Length: 503
Image (cartoon, rainbow, N blue to C red; front, side, top):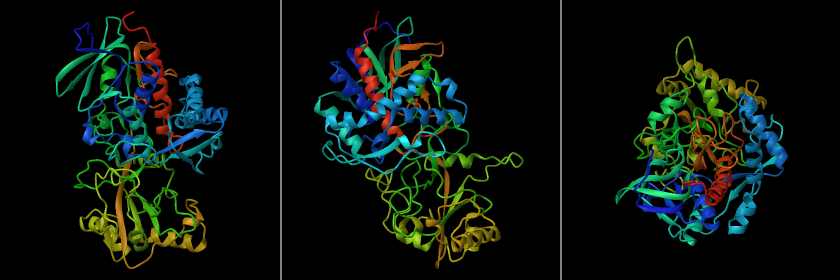
């Protein structure tokens, strides 16, 4: 929106959004000598960005050249590589590799995990390791991901002003199209804030906008587990001033459950093994579980890749004009039902933020009708709208694979081949979904936002899941937080150093 004034206030840098990326951008810009104002549309007493729902994993390249090779190979899978600036890929590798050093310098804590790149068929995957944030400093009364609590404490320690319950409505530009400020709306009404140096967009994606999801994602419904406040504000504001968008039709995802009436509108991941992690617990025999499509047949090596399995749900039956794998049905036995909660309680809506408190024995959710249960597989099939004979054959064949110790159909890990057995059987419908969308304004290695007319929109920077650099494929667990830390620093540093506003 073109604006020449008047303005209600002037600061050096405005950061829009107080998730991980916004917090790091604000801290970095402040430490570079800038006067920083953070605009956050959520209330201070109910501040729940995606960052707070996360488990706290972040990837760290152990070899920068190997990480460059890995990310380049990921882009090559769907032909995107020629469109990606090699300098952006190398900057990502170098800056994410530097995340532990930055955390060390600021008093952060983390643990190195034995998790590598998610796609072992691609070169360079072994260069990636995953770390997990450990509790460090956090605001009083904080619950949620320890990384976000730590970053919030850095903002508070510096006395950086955060204006909560205030929504950014428009980016303000001069007659050249350069960003000169932002229009906000809060308790004091509409205000125009001028910037001397720049604006950082870090408001997250569009997981909670049904309109944008139907516009951009290839299927519907898609359910995300995270904040209900990510409604695509950054996409709307950036597009309004001519920003180029990218990665709007992709997201890192898996199979997601959704439970109507929980008081939370999003979805939730499921814990296939009852292990409190994505994979089975070491040294413990996992319970019997499989995924089946609408015909009652298996179609994937369970559990599927953690951030890519949702792609297998998108296969359309062009003759019948249906998506036979939407919903997918999670079929499991009494041992799994009794082992642990069906959904993660270490992250997500049933985690520390407690959008919903899941019962320890799953019984309350069974009584609410969220879980189907029956004394036999055919009866369970009918309750799910599946063909009883087909599902019974599927479970029988899977049991044969378990007895043989080899999954002849999909090559599932032999250590997870436990037959589905017991006095009762259970099922939960699953949908495409994940933790966040990836689309938004395209950025470069300096975190500048691209213009649809070519070049870059002056004085505008972005960081985080809004316009993530990850495309069809996601590198491994913790890719998002790693990007938030890295490009939060880049955006904050370059915004603070910028002197082109008004020139």
